[in-house]
Image (cartoon, rainbow, N blue to C red; front, top):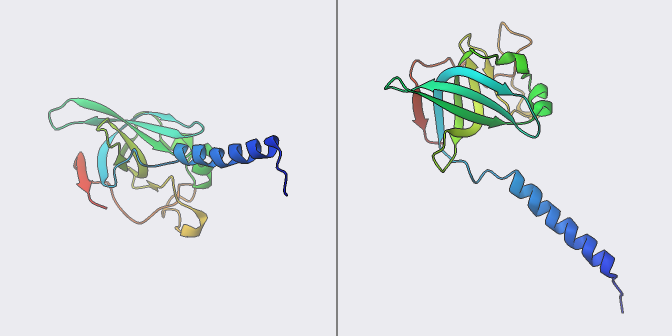
Length: 159
């Protein structure tokens, strides 16, 4: 008969549960599958671990301003993708695309940002994406294509 100590059972249980905790932390169930796009001005770029936050002021059609927060990867991943804190200083105009929170709060998961100068930033690119940096800015973030900022404030796109 095989004898398993209590310590072994406890260690295996904790190992199994730790993977569930990691999955819960990195889950995306709080975000909607649809994508929304906003044009606004950077209020703050929190280049922090475990997640960075790009805080944007968006002017609504009625002239009021809504502050949106867009979550992205931490600084290590961001820098590997060519994104630095200095890329989004307060006052920088940009268009951002994200998966919004399902609960309707003004926040989302950042998928792409395009500054007014046309430089595109993708915080979730992986080295296997083989996407080049934008033309004319060799120090900029990788680009997912030649998308230009649009003139509108907000659009919804189904994925």
